[in-house]
Length: 414
Ligand SMILES: Cc1ncc(COP(=O)(O)O)c(C=O)c1O
Image (tube, rainbow, N blue to C red; front, side):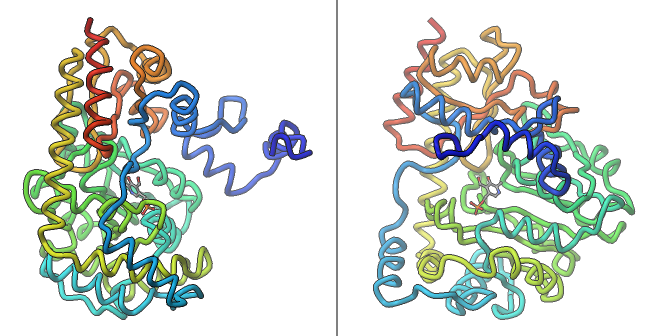
């Protein structure tokens, strides 16, 4: 670390010489420069820029207010009552029960809480453990929709597998079923679906979901779904792919309490699926973190049992924030997509003369006092040109913060 008596530059140089998974991962995730050196992620760069300039940070997707008091209180009570040691490897029974109850209440799924559910260190660990469990090496392919949440490419690289991408195109970001059919083959081990989708806010149609199931059956692939925004769908109830005919036995459904309860720092996630697949993931997960977040587990169980009104309200509040942000961006002269879910809105900066969204985002704090993320941060090098002028804004901030950001952005039009 700089300033701690260690020569940082030479340790980075030494890292370049070390072969192994870190290098594959950094390369797969686009974190290595052309000379092989590591570079900070655009998220770190933009958050540092927000801190330096005092700009409003609509870059990283974390809420700026606390979630439901009952959930926070349950964590405090758990700590006070000694829930501070290793929980069981699969998760505390009360949370396993609450996840099964939640899947039944919202999706009509009947799970065996002690065989079909696994608690993880956020959705991130669930994804990592799942891919490490299911893919074996360079002959295995993982199909993802691009742009994608950045950990996908990193973990596929870490697992030594090949990433195959299906493009989502501006402005509705719905995949072309022909592109999907072309991407899936007998080499496909996993089709990884993120719905509602980060970074685009797209929600996949029922036809597309059916096609995913058909292709997975035909090619004997496992479907892995990342549904962390399941309660932030704006145009109707969320439909997990696992509930479609023929899907359950080959689908692992991943979610997390972070987005639903505004507790992204707690990292309580879970996987639901058939017990043989869940056991395969557990075999890896137990050697990644083993367990995590003992006092947060009963708190997330409390959250999952909140009344329906809570879940309706958070979707409604986020939809209002989407509208507020969208109208601010439109007033500033941008073309704006209309997301159907998640925290995020994508706009095209080309109408204001931008040709490179990364440069546009680097300049935005000075020009308008707002921070955003270029969509290229979520794309593989080969496809970055398609997203060259697109920018992602996070709407998961207080209304007054979004109003302030909207009026700052409107000044760009003048
Ligand atoms: C699509 C998606 N998946 C997974 C995660 C990570 O979830 P967790 O914080 O539960 O690890 C995020 C967080 O931004 C996300 O956007």
